[in-house]
Length: 187
Image (cartoon, rainbow, N blue to C red):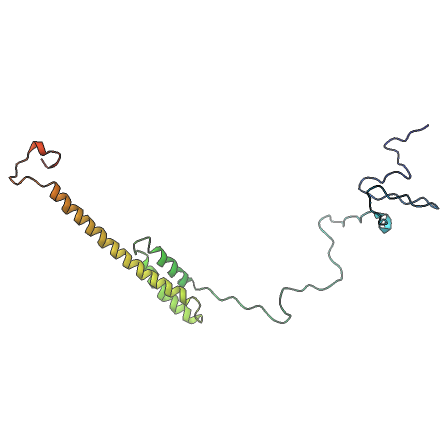
């Protein structure tokens, strides 16, 4: 008895891995489908995939078919043009917001850019008008906040200085008392 090894192909054995069963011998019946396999007939032409295109990369260019649509929308209508941005109005609003954190230093820059942004908004049919107005308002508020904080700091410093003078005052007779050294460091 001769045994067939794993390298010997069997005429009616299992199909090669990843492939389809071999074609039936001439004049015979096709072999039964493999267990767990599909009951569909094999594709025509032996089931081998077509070779890759020469050149190697990607799919071959399409031939025939429908022409490319060229974009979205109805044919003959262009999409609406984008509005130009108003950089001065944007800069005004940014500087106005930052003026709150810089005690009003950038407030003047925000006001100037806001006024220039309003002029540019008139040329661009109102594009950026709200941003420019917002920049002017935040710039003014930033300056007012800076002025208020400056006065508050000076008033608080003056109050502390007056309290410090009352605590560390010299004795009324003008004589330095060594026992009061910690209360009167001028001795």
